[in-house]
Length: 324
Image (tube, rainbow, N blue to C red; front, side, top):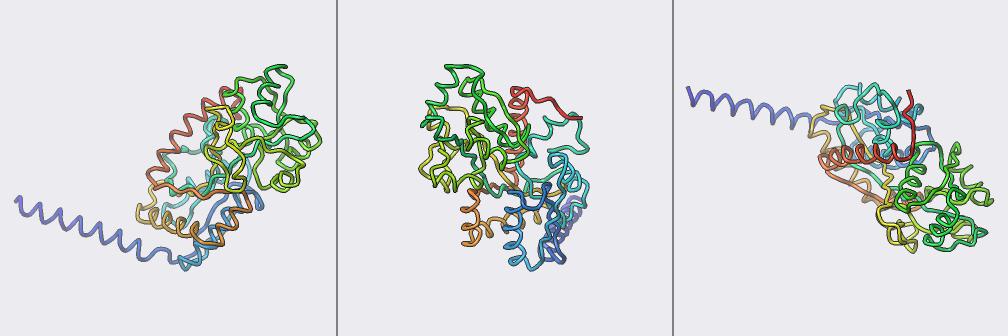
């Protein structure tokens, strides 16, 4: 009886292994849909297209970008959460994935249990920029000016709850300053107002301001990321410049529907890593101010859970009310 059970168990294991191998070997055999929860031309979309092109060439199938913008990314998230977990629908999203549970009172999906993390793709440091006309040359001088006249300093953001807003709120909390958020529809308007001096500073994505920084029209006091940015290697992080605990990691990553076979998730992870190592993608990322970043799928899942919890604290501290 015991030997019969053992033989049955071994047969099941062999069958499971063969199914897994078959899924791996036969995948992909048709185009893969990549849902991007933002409009075409957004930073997330540009990163997605750069990666998808390289992955498609390597995998022998086209990765088709499907832009599903709206509702702060939640429309695209829902489309992925409810898709078949077969590896033919995946998502490339930003770290706002971990903010939406705190900024929406109710979501039609579970941000953790309805998704399987594949890997982060990149981090995009924000540069704290200020007009030279403000006569503030260091981060310590900015903090001192804010503390000298509480409530008189303001900062731009690309909308309530955006990465640029949360980065500034985390800096504000860590520096213990009182500053007012002036939200705009996007980075273009925010940069214009900072250039004019009407708004004091802005944690801007690097791509829209790197030209003005190099030409001297804007001064980069620091970057808000945990590490220095490859595009601005001489600019310190906010922590290095004297405000510990102010680091904010804005990332773009790949996810799949929950229950996607692990061998397919692993294949996608490896293909992203391969694409990131290509000279063409490296050059594209440098122009965008993006730094490549990968984690194993299980590490990415754990990171997402941790960041959902930390962003909940940050959103509450920022006084943002959840949308219905």
